[in-house]
Amino acid sequence: MDSKEKNLLENSILNRFLRYVQIDTQSNHHNSEKPTTPGQWDLLRLLEKELSDAGIMDIELDQYGYLIARIPSTLPEGRAAPVIGFMAHVDTAGDMSGKNVKSKVIEQYDGKEIQLSGEWVLSPDTNPELLKYTHQTLITTDGTTLLGADDKAGAAEIMAAVEYLMNHPEIEHGEVELIFTPDEETGTGMDLFPVSKLNSRCCYTMDGGERGTVDAECFNAAKVEISFTGVMYHLGSARGRMVNAVTMAASFITMLPQAESPEATDSRYGYYCPLEIEGTAESSKLTLYLRDFEIEEIERRRKVLDSIAGTLEDIYPGGKVAVDFNMQYLNMREYISKDPLVMEKLEKAAANIGIAVSREIIRGGTDGARLCAMGIPTPNIFTGGHNYHSRYEWAALSVMTEAAQLIQELIILWGEEHE
Image (cartoon, rainbow, N blue to C red):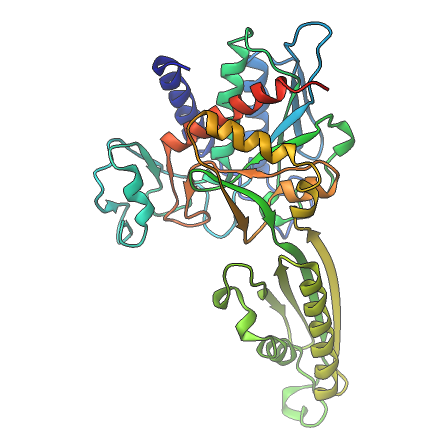
């Protein structure tokens, strides 16, 4: 790719990204519909149209918001290569507003503090990675919302790479599947995914962060709903008879090991995380997440929760505690390691465009982890975003462009593989 083509690719990514972040696609974990918010439909339909405008004929957007498109093989007759896929999610997190995003494009970043709006400042003192991109183009928020690089950066990179591929039919490659999913941030985005419709041997999620980072291992994740049932009496005559469900829920939280919380752990250490509590003195509910890289540690923590529940029922006679445990996704490590070529191709493609790959662990998960469990190994690739889910979110355009180039190189390399 010459400098002119690279500039065109960069401009395509920037324009698409700025367009996508204007659509409020925050998902809602309280809604059982799929997708959980109407804004996700708006972006999915826009992507559907852009895929069609690019000349792709095989496109399907189903009733649950799963958008799957296929670019046909350009290999000579008689040659076949494995089908590969690329995936991104369209929703943004509910941790910070994603409505009325006012993105700021900073050209030739000077290495100094970036004034967002009001009191909010993006500083190299707290974000030293900024200094890697002096004299380059950065994209930030104005500080009042998140940016949406998670994962609209991934969507823009896939779409820009697709546009380039469709404009260069002389490039030989196998069939490529493109997948856009809703509600990844709720942890339920793949619950209804039609995996039987995919032909991919492997897939790559474009949902990572810093330049060169590749994720082939993630948390095992469980969601636990804990219900507390109290015994209600008039407060004036409650002595010896009332059991307060709110008090029980609070006691449950205080009995969790504080050394195993998100704020007390890093690296490979897992945690308990009380996420949401609601209810009344008669009936309350606690939502709690369990995370760990080893499934045995998830099981250990599950037993701890059952033990705490039993202890509370002893402490509060008449009160009841019910623990509802559900696995959300599994560590993708075991699935990816069964097909070494998936990572070998990725590392070779990165080297071909001058990027040294750093294998990282995700203290979280992606739709790729769920797809792994469905039988398609799916590592996660960097997109150039930083400080996800916050008002301090920013992205480096040069890295976004490299991510799109990496997609193109992977498509070419897998096209050389004989099936």
